[in-house]
Length: 189
Image 1 (cartoon, rainbow, N blue to C red):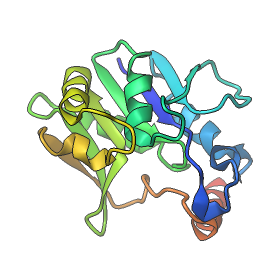
Image 2 (image 1 turned 30 degrees about the horizontal axis):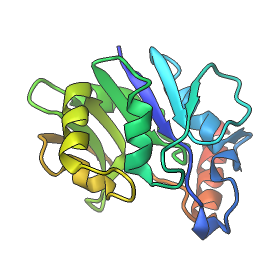
Image 3 (image 1 turned 90 degrees about the vertical axis):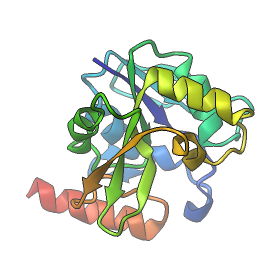
């Protein structure tokens, strides 16, 4: 049992300011891919502007608007209630296989489990959290607006979940979007 918190705001500067969660990849928007990946969550909270979705979700926006991912996590967490909260960016079209792996990675000894790619880079927006640890990390951080999201994990026990398949690869640039389209197209064949 878990709740999912999906961050779907941001300015998408590297994509020319388009509505990134609404970008089509493989016949679905980026946001639809991520929401579908967590369809078994008890509650799905999307932090960002309201968009048409074929799923039931709770909508909210960060305060202040444009305050960044930590501000979005802080406002979204208030709409969840499960002991485990999965935090995902809305631009992870291949994240579905990572969801159960992240949840399993959150064993008794860890406060959070996050994806780590083949190059050793941690994805701080593909993380399963114990609710109490995330609440404490947010409180310790102070003002969430414009805070670095990696600071949330700096004082908690983190399980590093290997991601050799690139499940946590995000779509920050048009080259990333093209690669995701190609990868999803290859999977559908």
